[in-house]
Amino acid sequence: MKWFEDGALHFALGIEDTFVPQSRAGERPIDEYELTEHYEQVETDLGLAASVGAELLRWGVPWYRVAPTAETWDWSWTDRALDRFRELGLRPVVDLLHYGTPLWLDDQFANPDYPERMAEFASRFAERYGDVATDYTPVNEPMIHALFSGEYAYWPPYRSGPTGLASIASSLARGFVLTQQGIAEQLGDRATFVHVDAGMRYVGDTDAPEHRETVARLREQTFLVEDLVTGGVGDGHPLLAQLHRGGVTDALLAWFRDNAVRPDVMGVNYYPLHSTEVFEAGVHHGGGFADPRPFFDAGTDGLREVLTTYADRYGAPVMLTETCVTGSVEQRIAWMDESVAALHDLRGEGVPVVGYTWWPLFDMYEWTYRHSSSPRVDHLLTMGLYDLVETSGGHLDRRRTPVADRFHQHAVAGSRAEAPA
Figure 1 (cartoon, rainbow, N blue to C red):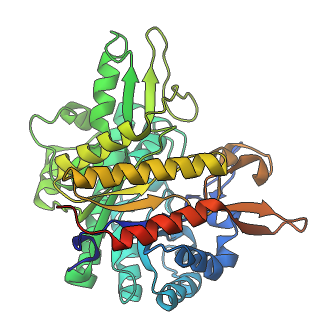
Figure 2 (cartoon, rainbow, N blue to C red):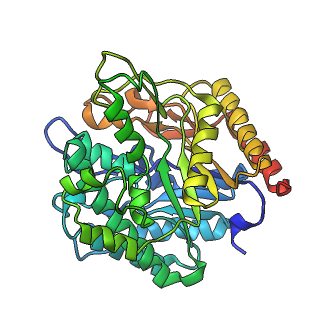
């Protein structure tokens, strides 16, 4: 029996692991592990996760550091980290790609060799650490990857528009499939795959003539990569014409159907303050960081909707793989209580919810750091169980807050919960 089959609600944490190492004029690299000093403090950080009752930790691998050249592999830091996972008995859910590629991979996700290179990295990791790491997310939030790199031209390789998105999404999806196949070859039935994407919702004047077509496209795009990797894109798919314009051939779509991979658990990331975008009649917003639409706090109503939608669409158990609010300790605790209660309610209604993840374990730095010259402190987001506090010497302390105590209470109660009738 795998961990998600025991009927309990499993509690997890995550460590923010965005890696976009490329730079150009006006943009600096962003590596959250470097910004938060996780490289230096990895052993104590993993200990913090275990100390508050987390059973699982969503944790990423800096591919660009592990593979500094196309033919070089440096596992020294990951060896340290995985040794600590073994020591603690903490279960990693490994984010193999949480944005960003190595510096030597020209054109990043648009490189024709990207899918095979990604699969090679994943297979090598699984072979080396398969005794302790059996749970994998092949690509975290592939649709956010595709939007930021393929539609918004915000991250490398800076493609734009719906056709750019289709091209990048299909490349990500092919790498996703090859990655899952490679891990399965290494680990066999021991492997568990937690697919993770962002829950995205659109409300407001969605029927306004100037928005109707865009909203219809965006609502379908939310599921595009997962539809591709699970073999769900064929004749009649509403985005078929967009895929064709983006260079996706019928032969490639047939390959996806012939090589379909399934999630053991379907993960959904949901942030009440950011996951629901608002359309306004007469107002155009392109979306994304450069031209954001207003957001609507949909609270637990939005959370219930996205989890139920993914459970129904893909026929797999679902897990809330990221949630939090940026705010005071009191605001963080309030959302934790509300969101945990919502998951228990869903389970009671028969929705197969198997996990809850507070993201992140400790604070992080906003992605706007990449497009700024300001010091990291100007981009701090207070989201974690532990606040990041910069000392006079420039060191980052992890300061425990009451949010950690509340998470521990929920985790202990969740481990004792009976399966819903």
